[in-house]
Image 1 (tube, helix red, strand yellow):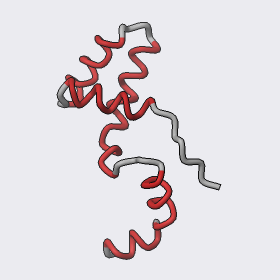
Image 2 (cartoon, helix red, strand yellow; image 1 turned 180 degrees about the vertical axis):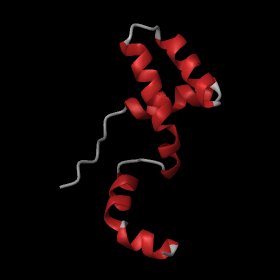
Image 3 (spheres, one colour; image 1 turned 90 degrees about the vertical axis):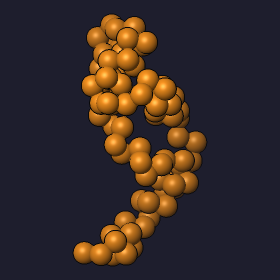
Length: 80
């Protein structure tokens, strides 16, 4: 399968994600955010959870806070 074929097959979902402000690179941070959320749900302070998630995933703390901030935002685009 070519890149063109993948894009064509998934065009609608890709367009919706783009309109919602999702970056294609966000997929690599799903596990990071899941770890952060789990730690916070278990009672860890947000700063500790962010530092721990950053360490586990080899990401800078600044990038971790950026991801957390973006992933917490509500999606304002509601596809009909």
